[in-house]
Length: 209
Image (cartoon, rainbow, N blue to C red):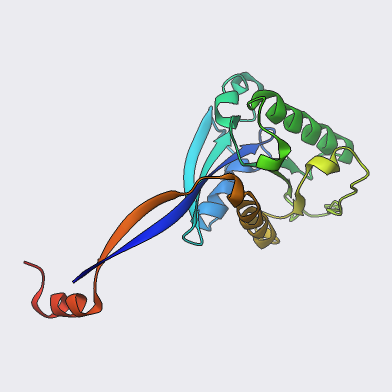
């Protein structure tokens, strides 16, 4: 006896934005594969694509975009219709510089997504990376909703992609964003076919024909 089950899956689009060298690709590598791969000598050209499934319910298509100026004309095609925007900065930079980068990339996203997209259909996560650096000052991730910039940011995370410190906070933030946006999406339904326990037992004994 074969058992048919129907399963709903929600497809999410996540885009990584930030200057070159801040660690976007390393963050994706740790999030998708659970490992840290130093990328000191390589830069993303255009964009790289990965997929991550969460809770057997969400399929997250991840676009890791280039931070170099010469590739920025290519990024809009990857930005459009994104549900989750992860803006990454490095704490190697000054507080003013990090704030300028966050403002730039948030405006870049809003300018290059479709005009009908409202803030209720996407979430913005800001990542302060490289808190493992010796002598580094970990920025406050407490949000000030009276500040205009913070009103557009869902959550801030200070982490080390290298050591994994606080990376679970980012993972949780992405899962929360998926759950919050689920109601705005139409699920993709598909059928899975699996043998009953009796049939599976007989196949283990006799093998399949």
